[in-house]
Length: 509
Ligand code: GLU
Image (tube, rainbow, N blue to C red; front, side, top):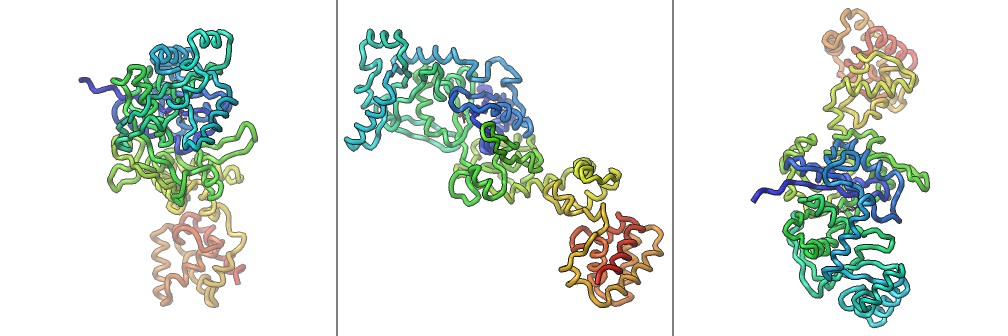
């Protein structure tokens, strides 16, 4: 038999900004598609009109673009199985729910909210542990199984509100193989007669999701663990439609957990611990509240997706820094972990640091120039490239550059008193005056010459390197930070370096 063409979909509901757990689901689908020369589809599941949030769909699309997750078929891209937004496929679902009614797998239910509540109360009083619409209770309710055909038709014709429910088989064990979780077994008595179609003329998630996965020829459903409880119903729907032979394979991904490992990662954790849980900044259209995004926090998209991919999967080697292509090459659904993945904000920064140090200094300098221009500092690209090369090892983000390098653009205005106390000794001014004299004589103010001068000087004086270098740094930087003292001097240039040493000797004491 021909191997089935891999077609996967990411199927978010536009109910708000995409959580990073959702981005990871999209990413795994994308990596799996790329690995198998398959197709990655974006389908927008917007059938729950009560939860629709304006701007959320655009946000999802922009997030995937920023991550470098390219869509093969979708709303903007089109494709042979469109439309790719469920509200644009509305008519279709009616027809499919009708099919289930005709085959006896679904039925109309006319119960009002009050009647449903009364049913639950009754079951509670009878000390029933489950209070749901199911094989046992449906016989006492107002539906097309208890009403005559004429009564049902009259109600439908009169425009009475109704839903269509799935007729859950009685006491049957449903077995499904999940690629991540292994065999999943559920008895149908534990599941209620789920609503498939609502009185507003829209399908529920379950119906639309299964119908679309079938029509779009989805080969693998890769989604979050929170959908695992829906799996038996979905399998029964495939069966009821007669689509079992082309049913997709399933892989339910582990949850993203709080840094403590206790419970699901939420926006509140991010707010409390100071990290974003959304890829891009999001402004709530209702309240105007702004939530932080990884993009705006200064993460590189490649670092962000690398970090996310490793929450629940790794290629089984020591290598942690991988591009999207490399990850796709190694990706394997059977290696996805079962246990929840603890989110580690420090590790997220570490990934960004690794990508930052890998980027070439010219590119980083361009980004840094934007920061400098905002501060009204205008210097040559060449100079900024040199600064960046010296400090990038010490930064996680471009926004860290200024703190690490401001002294390359302005002479110290003040001197860190803690460092002064510790490093500025009685003999320091004299030592610095003497080295200054030596430095004045240096013609080529480059690292090699400076090294020689300094080396000879400490040798001759019989002092430790630190005795000279620490106060020297203080005069140049104003603090105890920064790259090597000689590198700093070389980049500042002879005139500026000597000027700073001179001022230091005058002002520090
Ligand atoms: N619309 C569902 C969601 O928002 C999709 C679940 C699935 O992939 O089946 O997550």
